[in-house]
Length: 112
Length: 113
Image 1 (cartoon, rainbow over the protein chains, first blue to last red):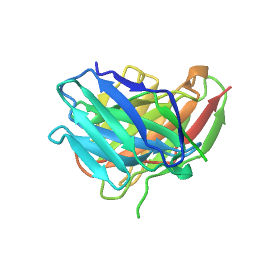
Image 2: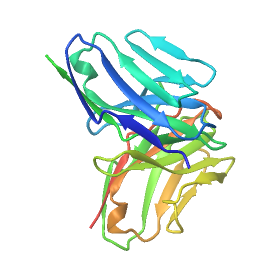
Image 3: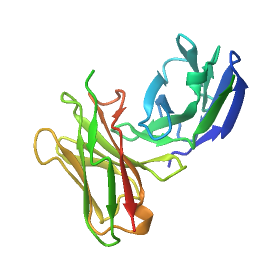
């Protein structure tokens, strides 16, 4: 079945610098890749997603890139701010109803 | 903006007891999901539900689990005889249509003693 690997598990960056989180997936049939942000004790919130017919998508300071051949996708956050501190999860869809298989998460720490 | 809601926010139960976790998906959504997240671990898919039946389920979703949409608004997850390892945060999610964004509820933290 689908397996999603996410790296790094923890990422500490200086405020204002960029952060990059990478994921790989195993099932070539996956075609929807969302990224969720989860603050401590709260629900996962979708921050950006990408579908397999697109190689890159950007929304202000957040961008996602997808390489279907290599089966990996990445989240890029530029000009990081303290409120970006959270756990970020990548996911890949499988099945007829697009159930999500999740990565293990990356704890992003923004140092002031 | 409409949100998925879940009740209760926390539930403590004794091993072997039945629990029912409740979710109210966003009103015009048609696809419903349950996920769980053991403390400090990744979110895991349990089951998807569409047109009043289970569409897909994972290996975690064994005979102790069941889902139901008893009326037009609620979507429930029942664990018939809880085990210690069922302790986790359970998230409900819904989407408007297939291939669309899944919106998550705030979760129910279940603790089995």
